Length: 394
Image (cartoon, rainbow, N blue to C red; front, top):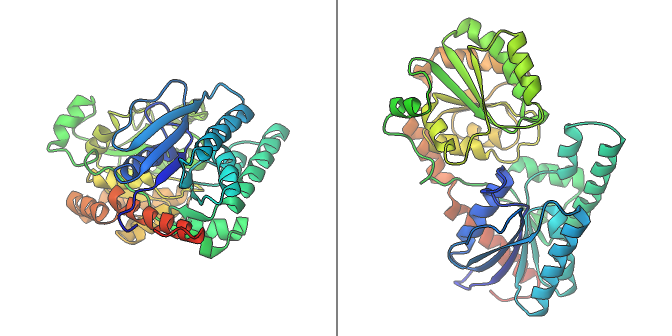
């Protein structure tokens, strides 16, 4: 952007130290990286004031999650309006449609460009996780908010070609408005361990078993049920394999029952919520990471986190995971999303570890493509286009 620093008002959902999740992790990382160059105000909704941010990044909690959605939305809109009246905003950068729409509409009134990062179809995700009249109504309201946000944004950043196609085909967003900018990973935080044995000892994991790890929110679209069904077949061929499942969510009790009904207590371990500081250790302790996603995987943040840790990844061919692995090691992509497809893919992989990509090659692939410096430069280019659309010389 010709070396020019701009005033960016960014709106997210939460902050990852208070509420884990891919969107919040991405939001923190991209705001911190952009904040090394631009004056970034990052707005979030948190239970308590978030920690102090670094560099030119200023972090504010605008509302409490305990408030109603309409109150939270109004708080984001009013804050943005006040900042724009003071000429403190050159560009609005939004990551969560419900909180971003109000600031975007205020920006529209003042010819301030709006760039949106699309992390997934909010209403579609709702519909995948339940049914009933109340949920249908919530999904309908969510869809209306999303559609208004997509129409208001001047440019939209997506994390994969899959999400570009979804936005264009399902939401009729013009292709020229959409920019594919892959996500990234903190390669300093996620890296191979000098000694896998010592990490396993620290985590009280067995040294002599083939450890497969997945870390997911325990909801239907993440595919954990299908993975457990597949594991019932996997252990018949590879009895030494141990599956670790990290995460929390509404399916936890159902998963416990399914493990018990198959007699898999010695072959699958539910870790519960994996604390932020322990996540790199679990990557370092495992032999293989598996991503069993069924739908709406925009990028695959955990995929690149695992690979940066030197951990090979096997995954369903869904969304961003297909794009990441096709460019690296296609044999580790399953044929489909069913439990049969997973078992059929995992058994030969686990039986032939000599064919796996090395830890060094996994990490090198990620470090050459998926760093926050690279992502921030591409986001900056989209900012420049959005400013030029409004006649601003950059």
